Length: 308
Image (cartoon, rainbow, N blue to C red; front, side, top):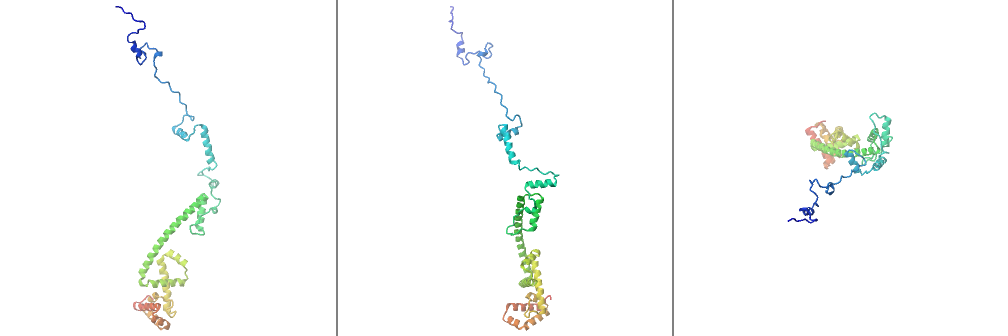
């Protein structure tokens, strides 16, 4: 039997098409699909990016500008102006290798060098009341010659004072150690006659009129051991002369060390002279230490023999 379809009845499969997610659009390969009915998923093109204000430059320069925060030419120029204010007035051109003396003078003066060496102010060493003229003149002259500023020369002099102070401290330690060693050697060499030799040295110093300051300079120059031997010999020689001549009546300036150096004959003669002296003999018999020391020295000389 012939069945007539209702006018609104869709062909078979149309419901599926309308109820589908694509809204009934023809498949992509359907040549009958209209552009108006298609769903275009392509995003619109991005607008062109704006070029930086400084244009196209190398990456390092671009990074520098960005780090500075310069967002325009006005800020870059402002920064440069501020830089000129800070350094422009204090800028000094460097000297060339062929600079004239006049150019050198102008350059050093611009840096702050005084007009004359005498204008430098130097600090005094610690504990000093006046400056050493030789050192001070050298530092001032050298500083001015090489174009140093007043502050530079003052700092150089302060460093020099500190350096020489450290050297002096170390020198004093070394000198003291050397002195101890030399005196120990002298004591070992002289044996029991060390104390008498020291006394002879004191007499030699007194006879020559040498003061303490002079002794210090001599000791620094030749050492403690050599100085002791020098004045000890002088004292012994003076004592020997007194012992031989018999000056003083009671031994005069003769030291026991000098008496001990006499020859046996001279020692015997000197012994006889002293014992003939009533004053000396009384002191000796009463146990006077100095009188007994001289007598004992003469007795040793009479037995051993001396050098005079």
